[in-house]
Image 1 (cartoon, one colour):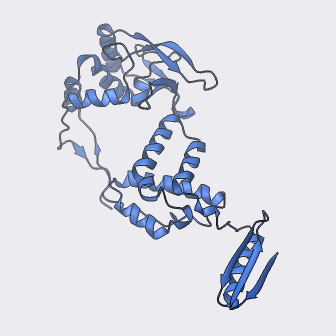
Image 2 (tube, rainbow, N blue to C red; image 1 turned 180 degrees about the vertical axis):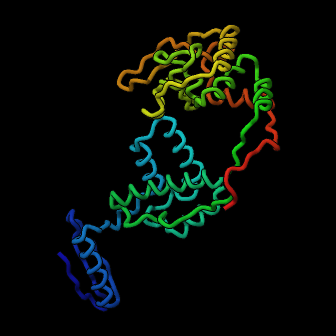
Image 3 (cartoon, one colour; image 1 turned 135 degrees about the vertical axis):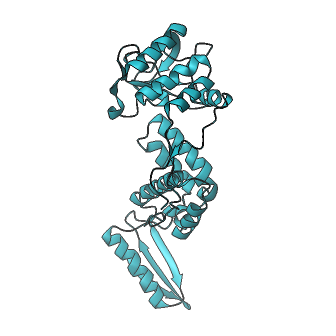
Length: 314
């Protein structure tokens, strides 16, 4: 039901939305009242209606609602959380979603203190928050549409030669040199290398089976979980030089048992004894922060003349 009434020198337009809530606005001219009423009722009929009050929810509230329901794994959840808190909420967190304009998003994206790839990730998270808001009819459009980040120079891929790999290896404490051997010989991710495996085959044969990974979400203790996706489950053949290096590592630093939580079955997480190939001196799993510190304290210098450029500046 919609109507326009004149009260004194002003025109009052009102209508009820699909939930029965009344909305009213006052105008100096009848033509403006009629235009507002026509636009609102047309939106109701075509399914494009957005309650004007719905957009008052803040970007932080919508961001947390999206983050908590998105189908992200624990590691990705941690990355999304840090990106929202470090790069998105400080600028937009306290603003109503309906007040955020495309021009403001473009200015933010252009000023992000990140490389092009990381800036695109941050913009993608913000856009996902707004896409969810559009689906929930809190706003009519996504202000991230059409926003771009600087392409900058394409990143350079460092491809070390054998001598450089050996130098990197020698700078590490002896108990961690096997990490370099396994990574170079298999291409495994950090969490997979340090995860060990009840179901995975330990390095020693001519292949390694990747089924689990170590998940490190500071400040919580690390735990074992399934690998990132079904496609990440794989059997990796190893060259003899790799298996020989790992055999030498295991001769000096045998596999150790460590009590650790296993969440590979989210319905029934358990604490169990896991066989870990690489451990700390105390026998515990090597976390992401510990490995960063080990790498940093080793004073490893990357040679600047061993860079190979992939692509050109765009």
